[in-house]
Length: 427
Image (cartoon, rainbow, N blue to C red; front, top):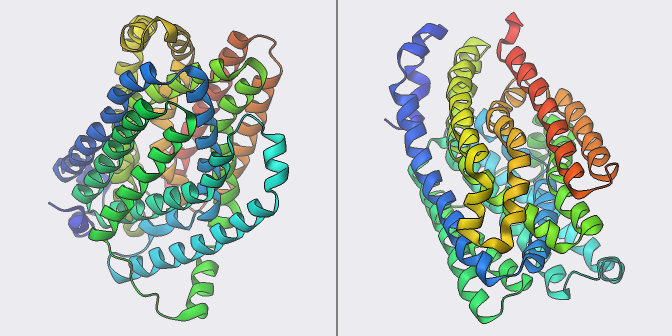
């Protein structure tokens, strides 16, 4: 059963939803299988990449990718998050095109500013090769386009297409990074391969969901901006802060403790994030659609929230136990003794990733309830915590531990907040 048919299959009570789990779990299983393959490809590829690239070059690449990720969130104005809130078919396609046009305009402005500030950026960021700075606008375009089209596919219930997009993207990125690394093992080849791989996924996405002509001109575009103004007003700063806070550990650790330390943390994030977020991404894609439909029909999504929270908690506990018991030695076995530091970092970060696995998919409840201002407040608290825990501790180990504990406590509060919002008017 395609998820595009699920709205009609809903009943008016939460019990009816819970008694008909088959379409939900079939959709989760479909996205999960695609996500599993897409995440296992770079995870397995890391076994080769860790032996081709030294930690310092990997650390530079991940710091560059962090900057691109922050900018990629900014240029969409987060309008793509509103796509599941639109009805299926032409209305959502029009919203996707409005989001794409907005993004192109923002990227043009960012590229112009970057060009004007290039001498300053090159002077302030001497460790970053010039080629990586020039590659940034292209990377931002690729990342933002991938986000728009993947969100559009998930909102339409095209889960097979979504899985194919992610698998192709992951396979292309990993294959090109390994190949390019054999020729020139440096940060630029890692970045260039990443950009080409993302564009490959975008091109495949456009085969399933071709770009449409945007009808209505500037008046329609302004109407779209007005209707979803809360997203750039609240979600954009909130998600930009969230992405920045997520990338700050690599940037700050590189500055305070060196590129090698940043490389350890980068590999820990990349490897630990794969199994812990494996099902989370699949569940999120399905939860967005199911919960949005329930909210439109019943004014709440409590049953969908609890159904999702239970499976996320079970998966989180299982993955965390594996890494607590054997995380460090698994890193040594997989990547070699030179990367033991990455295994030690991963063990300290387990509580953070375990709670992120539960909290992140459920966070879409804030968008459904249109309470983005609460998310912005939480994200600002997160940024403050991140800055304090990264700069105040004196040692590398104390910094990582403080960061993990602080983030974990904030996630506990976030889960409680989204649960309250899922109750809708009964909250």
